[in-house]
Amino acid sequence: MYEKDAQGIIDEDLIDDIAFSFFQRCEDIITVTDASLGKVKCFKCGNIIYHKGKKEENLKCKKCSWETTWGIYFKSYQGKQLHGGTAFEVFKEFVSKLPSTKTPEEKMILVDQLIHGVHQWTETNFKEPIFTRPAAENIISGRMRQVMKLLNHLARGPKRKETHNKWTEKVLTWDKYVEDKKKKKL
Image (cartoon, rainbow, N blue to C red):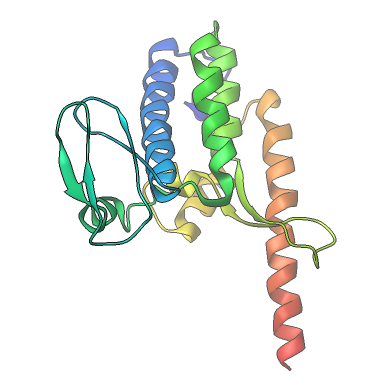
């Protein structure tokens, strides 16, 4: 998709396929993150089941009688990069904006912003947020180094360079943070 875009070729079907698959993944991330915050969405009917996060706690839907325990539900997504973490708003923004996009260009921009979104730490002792990893790690299969390499080597048309440059600046804050920590240990 990026290579074609860099060549000025717009492949609407490919852009739609990628945007829709990312949309579905983002919806799953939102569902899992909400569940971790105490609001499980029933697999059968979509009703919300509130819980306190205890493994043995029974989750039972009042509308359709679907049930499981929180521990089993938690294991169903553990290790699959489905928790939105500190990039939760990035995924929610993509899901809220994609349905109203009208052109392939608008979809491409949203996809680009999504994969270049970042997880970040914000604490009172930080002068500015520390950006820790790309949100693309939740969307694209692979370890962080693989995803970072992919993002750094994507062919980009002129309209994508700005998003990539902003992302690169943010990720450098993590590198600086790690370097500062190493210096303090010496």
